[in-house]
Image (cartoon, rainbow, N blue to C red; front, side, top):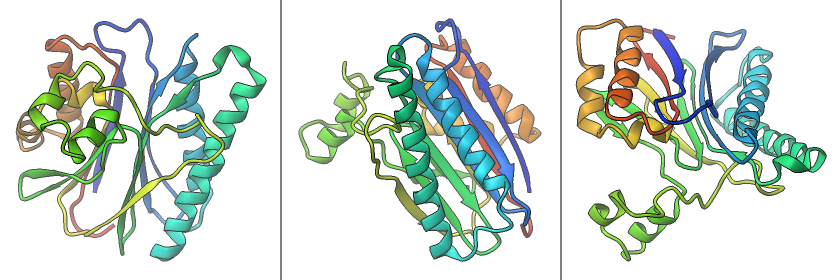
Length: 245
């Protein structure tokens, strides 16, 4: 097992509101997290940092997440706690009102793999040289596609495609979508929409299947986004799974 993560400001934004980390607990179980912050007065970076810091710290201090049911409960409770931390920060710092963050995570143990998400940062698995999206975007446009009011083609360049229907820190409670995924996969790939807005599925796959180190793959993906304009912050967390955890 090998992993690498990286975040980049991009070519247009003057600061980075993304946060990303991959961390292990005392049992060697792995948690990958990407958060894409939003809000005025640089508050987006505060929201994403609060999310990643709290969740990562809680995980590192665990001896183990336990069985799958225990892990699901831990994820839900920790994300609810993190949501309140961000929400309460905006109460104490009125200038940051309206800030929030997306969140996508993957939790890998020797027995199971769980994904969770809020917002439009994405989680994928790589299997047989093909990436498969696991998470569902909580956006207005995705909701309209699901209801049949928009086609996928119309959604691509819709002027409101970045309007979020769900984010961490905007309300006093939040629903984390959780996905139970088979562990017979080759890789786990998480990213902010700064990457998926620049590169399509086939372009991501092509890089992940190249004969490069995991670090080189992540760097190349970010380079390609910036080469296409780098209109947003770009964050990637990538794990290649080989053998046992």
